[in-house]
Amino acid sequence: MAYISASKPYQWTSRVFPDIPRTSNPSTLNLLRFFTSTDDSFSAVDQNPNPVPDPVTAFDAQPEPEKNPSPENGEPKVYQRTPRGKRPNPEKIEDVICRMMASRAWTTRLQNSIRALVPEIDNSLVWNVLHCAKNLEHALQFFRWVERAGLVHHDRATHMKMIEILGRASKLNHARGILLDMPKKGVEWDEDMFVVLIESYGKAGIVQEAVKIFQKMKELGVERSINSYDALFKVILRRGRYMMAKRYFNAMLNEGIEPTRHTFNIMIWGFFLSLRLETAKRFYEDMKSRGIYPDVVTYNTMINGYYRFKMMDEAERLFTELKGRNIAPSVITYTTMIKGMFRLGELMMG
Image 1 (cartoon, rainbow, N blue to C red):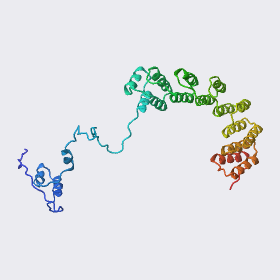
Image 2: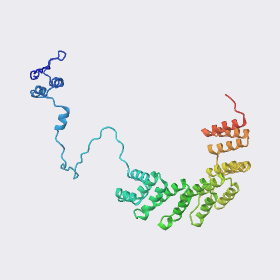
Image 3: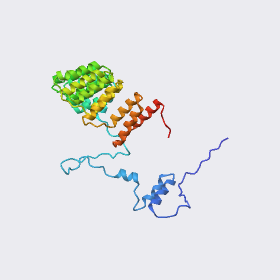
Image 4: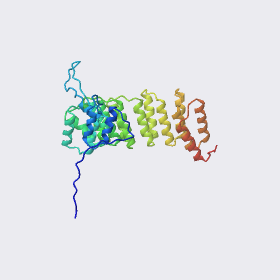
């Protein structure tokens, strides 16, 4: 049989800890309250006439700042919460739009979301959105939508950005159409836009279209300088059209456009690529006769070309000439020399 014993009601008694010195310091009394099991421990602190405020309760007890303080300079003071730790910078509007475009299909709903986010769109925002857009189709649709909706009138910079994007993606018909439609929108052409399109056609391997764009510049009244000729030379020589390159080089001279060191570097590189050794050497000598001295790129091109023809002595002579003119050889220079020696089996250890 079980017995139930009635215990005496619990009475709190102070606990004495011999390791803690007795002192009247309030901070010590505050520490003691953590060793008790009832709320009566606060009585010891409450009896102190000058208690030390608790950090948490003291912060809560501070008066809240006024919501509308009296302005000092005619502007109300704005209180902001102090951030704790490092926080990322606020996301830019163009990044938000690009994220929306990347995760959603291009629909009327997406267009309305963009308009709700940015009621007013300018050319700077359009350029930034095109720059960060990950989807080419969305970038093109955004470019056309903001114009058709009357949200912005594209300027030269946004046209140039769109042509560059389409050129990198080999969407050359779209790029060509945007370029040729610019005068209808009141935006003038310039040579750099045609150079971008010529280079894009060259990277896509469409040489004839690149040549047509170059020829169309003269028909449209766009002045051609050495920049457009350099772009054309690089395109046609990459495809081995060295005879065409020579014809356009002579036409350039007849127009009164003088070649630069960069022009000669392209021509020499292209003729060595087409295995036209004597023509490359003639252009090298022609460059020096015009008072244009070779740079490290020229020497690298010539050294690499001589190694292609297994002309070891000529390559070493140019390397010595380069160092004699106090031109610092680049990493490409040494790499070309080492590769040439490996090809000829004349690599000397040490």
